[in-house]
Image (tube, rainbow, N blue to C red; front, side, top):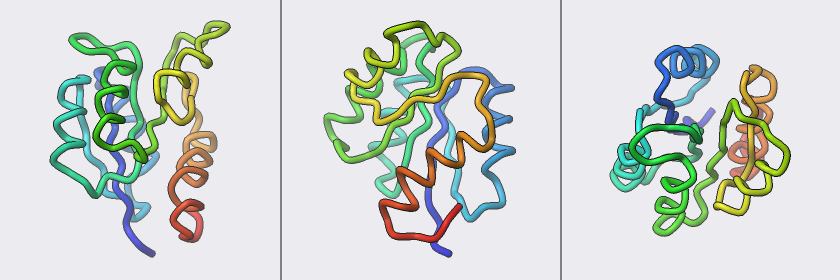
Length: 129
């Protein structure tokens, strides 16, 4: 099976490790960033990235602003928002910012894999994750 590349953008170490544990060993190259600014640079320097898991609430540059900047030069790159703040109307705001989909924390393994399947594997005509 073809490898895919995922960028995990998460300032919380435990959340980063949790996502890594779900994804490692599945023919997935995993890149990490801890800030929105770092995520932008990683996306500029790694055109092989197939999908971004973007935390929304981060210091320095939040996930929504980072998404807008990434979409300016990689408009077709799927960016999946992940947030602990699942307030009414937030989903609409997140999707309007350029994110392609949304995961509410806590993130469940099955939901994460289904989102990746939907936005990467199915889109590229690959098998399943």
